[in-house]
Image (cartoon, rainbow, N blue to C red; front, side, top):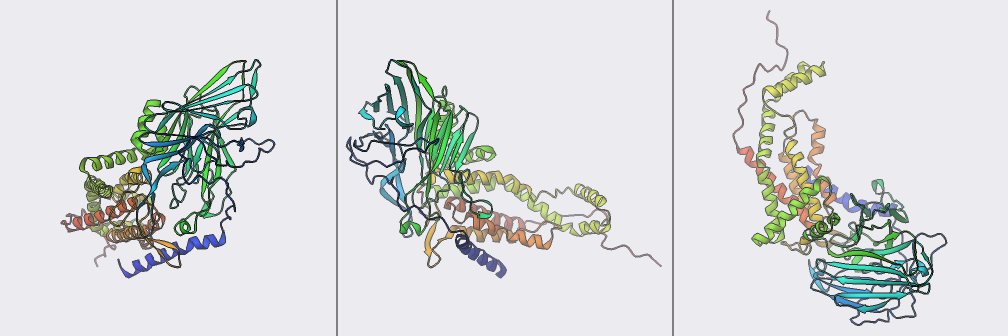
Length: 599
């Protein structure tokens, strides 16, 4: 890189450092609430009872559509724990549902500045900060009563029972299965001799929360499926707090959707998900999504946390009002998935249940095909060759470059031919400068005569873009990269922060800087398109710096891929330059000026 490139790179970095501070100065963040009443237990009790005081909730306002939770705090909370080879489940008598899921095969990873990857004695947990357990029925005294159920251990799970004073008996059964699944059944029985009218019910699905302090919350989301299409709701969608040009935006208080077609709803973050799937014969009427404030981060966490107001999202399945005849029973079946966002597992479940639940991975749309293919290829290389995932990413990048080598080589040679024909091109432009239509026609004839495609320079980039975006979406959600080390990188799914810059309180990530330098190098080696305006060519040369800004805090796996891609492109460009120049035999004279008349 020349001196000017280094100056521009330095200015971009300074802007990247100080622009966020300037935005926060102009639009200061809202203060966090002083008190948070729903902090989870530090340890899960191993007994069947607990004296933990439940959260305090206010009754619903008149006309409110969101069901509130009211537990009888005079009765102690009863907990029953069920463990299999993959997970540890905790069920609560408060609401009679699934309170917490600990994934035994996924240790909690805390990335610090000194120690790139640290595993604690805890594991990744779902539903940690939640106002109610999964499948709690939230609808006041008619269905909920005092909210306290009686729990009984069964062979493979638990049974929750409650009899209400109006004659309604609620029986829930939870059976732990394989593939992180729980088979659940809820029975509503009218034990009285009179018809029993029940209002519409909200069945609590779960709460989406960030994975840890380093999680900026951008991947915390709620997704639901209507039988044909999955929709994301969360920090980047309905509840986004930033509008155009990062200006503040007030999100709605809640989100409702569905017309008796809610096939499933999932609360998830970057790598883990909890999905509640009603029976396909009786989908839920609607979903209701709300924000859920989370505990204030500690001062140490604020050192490297980009979001100072962590927010989660709660999801509920809404069912319409109903009337039960005397001694009539109503039973609803559910399948709950609580585990990692591992594509093969979710694809197996989706195929068995025919409900497309693997859409949680985010591999939909045009680029999803490439994401799936790259993920399966990455796992195949890892398993067959025993390579660490960092080297697997490099291997895949090399394979992609080799596949596209002929196309890139043809494009580079075409660009060389166009450079050799520049005198004739300029002569044509000068000769027909007063007739743009004729000039365009003559230029097309000229390209055809010399067998040159003017779009050949853009073609390799356009063809490789789906592969890049597929790689981008794949790396962002591939749980295989979680905690995978590579050289100085402790976790390929997180930025490779080496230290915090003093005074600026800003992370120093080395891989994005190397990526930006290689992109500039590659841009300087690539000749501009013929006829391009010099100012535009200069702007295109420094355009890669924008990618440095956008990807600075993305995962190290993505910046590793792009860095290796740039280095291979540089090597390829230098190799092609050493090849002999194509021979061009100009057809017809090259006119640089009108011929002089003889005297």
